[in-house]
Length: 140
Image (cartoon, rainbow, N blue to C red; front, side, top):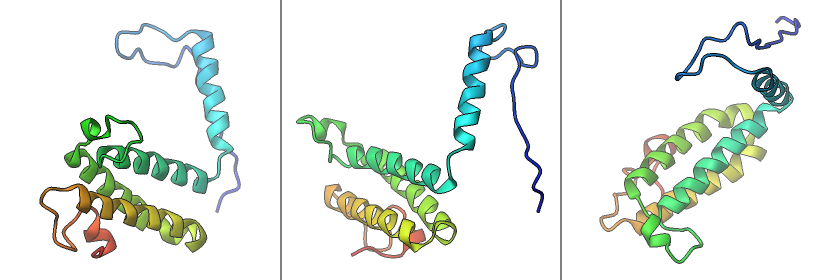
């Protein structure tokens, strides 16, 4: 295992124009480099947890669980299914790496969303057929 410290840094001269932009300003380059320094300091568990929480929040809204009075208007079970399945993949894959103390709350949140999806669905999936249940097993 190498202990070499690899550093990534962007410069304005190295950038290839993207989406019609001709070049990056020095301020844009410095902003990207600052973000790289910031993300390098964040432990993997925080990035995994943050991604899972964002997916949980979006899935909850798509299941119609938003706190607003227009929650039903925001319901989109097709989108919720995709988010819950992706979340199940993340939680299942990350669990051995992050340990049970971090994985347990993510699993609980996932299970709650799977049940909420079933409840919100006009034609509920059979246990084992719901979103993410291929990865987590049946949810009752």
